[in-house]
Length: 525
Image (tube, one colour):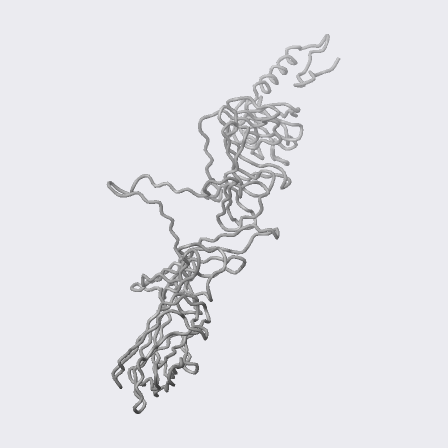
């Protein structure tokens, strides 16, 4: 038969034992000391000076002194004027009064229950207000939650960061928001390392809302937000698979009572750094709307069309001139160029081009032809010169001799007015620089040759060496130095057609006098 009980080591009364009451009382004393164990302290390394009968302590010190020497790790009690120790066993609980904490002996030392509550480790599940399960090891059912940073005064840093981690880029790390346990919105890293958000009306069909490229920070919306859509081409990019608008701005109410609504897009630019901006300079761009297209070569084009806002001058408090620049790419080309500017002075400026377009023609088109230094308009059939119309006025500085009854070319060797160089003095002819309708006129003054007396002076135009058949004139009853024969014609000429003036005296010879003789013409718009 053992001498003590198995768990509390209480002394047992032996058969035939004398003074059984001593053993019994000792066992009761141990029970009184160990059952509902409550110790005054556990941090002392030596007994107190004036202990009371029944005082109990946990001796946690490795080398306690005084009457506790050799009792390290034991539960000691003061009884009958002496300290006695009991070796604890795994599973014992002791309440430490000065700490108001419960301690558990695990076979190696005493563990604080409060400290254990402050640091849970390797829990397989935790439910707050509800039950956790294998699918949701952590579950909470509550109406409010607060996370606040631990301050420096509390031993913290004042910062608060919540870290969520996934092992591979292809895994999902997200926050899913539900209605009636059906998904409505999700934000996170969904199968890639780009932060994205998507929404759903039924929890089944999802629409990508936006996506932030992890390499550039650029944000994509619509189809540009789809997983694997590739990097956004700008800090903000939007895409759509349909024909609807990419961006819609609704302004339904003004800024104040009676104010008109307005949907505005504001672009602010400046040189320098964000914290220290510097004035913009002439040519700096405020904004640009740019268009690119995917072509048959398997790539996107460059910026094929654009609308830009530009500074016309270096900006100051008193000078802030601006302009708009519309740029397009010509048919069959790849280089974008400016076609129209609205200048700061209010002028509408068509940008010069060499010649006129040959493709994409339509009635009502206007260009500025730099080769002709003129505005030209297309009427649906041909290009017409609208400004800088051809005009000339020619004269001669000598009298032209005319034999009798012979059509003779009149020589004009002075181009008094000769815009665009259409009159060739060396050939005494007008050469049409372009197809069109031209108004031509000639005045020939008569001068007698001695006593010769012709009966008439005639004048006509020749086109490309033959009589034009239009605009013939004559003068009869000729008076020397007074009579003038005039002719006028409206001719449809092709580019390169040459027009000359021919004259004829009837019955006798004579002269076309230099004075009061001219040849002139101009194009009609």
